[in-house]
Image 1 (cartoon, helix red, strand yellow):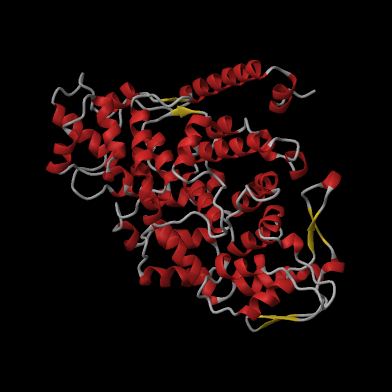
Image 2 (cartoon, one colour):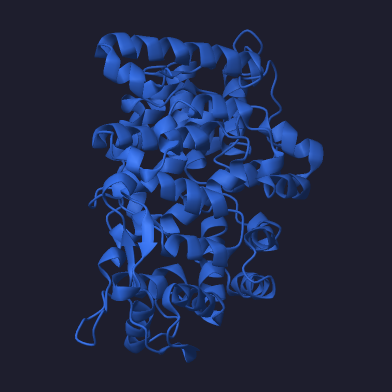
Length: 497
């Protein structure tokens, strides 16, 4: 029998299995460190000045924050060239991240196989896998876009069988199309098993004229996934879209969790959505025609342009940027790299440093990246995300986790707790090479005796710009270097990006 992770957990005592896994994790940690996934001996700091260093700003928005050494890599090629590299994720070797992520082999299996796992196991492993990918992947822009589309096409794993179906959705819908084509992304989502369960598409039938189609997915397709709440659709459009979506079902038994089309449950009549006709007797092809109609609508271009501009630039994105980005969406028929390139290369993006507030997931990952942490993301670390209100795949409503600052301002206490716990190396299952980081940034007492100079260097490293006198005054209360790092990660200069 192949010695899979499942075999180990089921065939041995729990303590022995965990010891085996812990040993494997130590081997992976040592291997990745030797291969370069560690804090370098020396680090360049962000450019001096009161404005945020442009390369630092790019890494804070288009990545989950700088990993030690990333600043030098961006400077070596230039910001636009770095964006171009990131827009082609398959060209970036991600072997070191894969070494950590391959432990979760059940997430690569078909839905029917996932039903063999207990829900707590799947919930924890999906959270760990998502966090580790965001933390260690060199395909940082890709991971940021995975997070964006995960919220855009939100599925709460706590509903029904979604927890067994979401691994395939994450792999085959979100990750497969995160930097692909928008129309293909929406088409894949429309008949994804997890989405069919979450928004009741598998209950949508109209076998006779007396049946009332289930409108849940049809409404969210128009309101959230494509046109937007003010996109110009009517209740009649929702009803007609729901008719076009009838007949999609999930197998049970041996093929549990796979999708098929049942023509006996489908409404065969002509439909009219947004003024466009879906011809009668289209059967399964009705969904393709519907997706074409909604993805080509001008409101969809504007809705997606607004959301991407909000994610990368401002909670209230500039109208001119939204207009330009929407025009690129239309011109390229929803080519996601072209749309993202427009936003990241814009003057509005370059001028927006330090104006957004990190949601919990971004805060946690950026803090771990900033200190070059070594972790395999076990429960104690995941618990911080849950306490801050951003458990992975656990937002209850279809609109996904909010992308504005105000909903997250009540999480400050847990952010402070994590910042100081990380700095003092007190988060179980997380190791922080603090002495090496201090030495690499030139903030070690063995390099620079002047305490104020060490504080200023660390401030630049974490915030991306020079401190003001009031910053230095506030940081003067730090008891030691680790306390100072905790204060810096808890400060507005780090939590705003």
